[in-house]
Image (cartoon, rainbow, N blue to C red; front, side, top):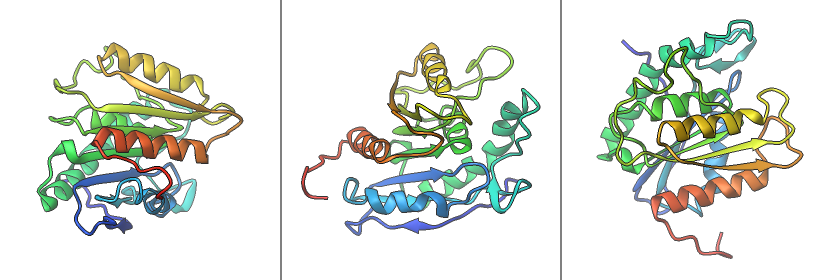
Length: 228
């Protein structure tokens, strides 16, 4: 049975949710690390509920933080085993939150950072029905040892995908973004991308604006400039 997870929430600005945006934090952080972005995006997505669940495991390298799966950086297959092992917990959480609201996946967006991006891409691409959008910051599409993506269910339409990465990222180099975009294309999942000049392993204001506009477009929400 998958472990139950939860985390901080920000309700829809309009008072009536029509979309659900789920933030997946990075290694050694927790849901509080990203939920502030939801508060910033309420003006772009006034009908969205935002949730940032804490990953299920305590992080050995950061005892106050959480992890979706362990990372030693010494085992080339640990990311693949990790996303597989953590996926049932995330799937169960998403299923429960969608059911609670009476939503289907076309009302769902996954937003990840670093290890959270690995989870967003791996899980989102393997749900029976694709989420509306997947937004990945400073992460990578984790590929299996054999045919990447071959075990995926058919998703029609596929999710809209935007990858955002810092040009100076020394933890997950920016080349990971381009490799991920190419691998997604091989899976017939087109991806947009944005590179933030001079940025390391993080999210800058330009990336936040790109992300908010991408999600608004994916959900068909009209953004009124000057009224944020």
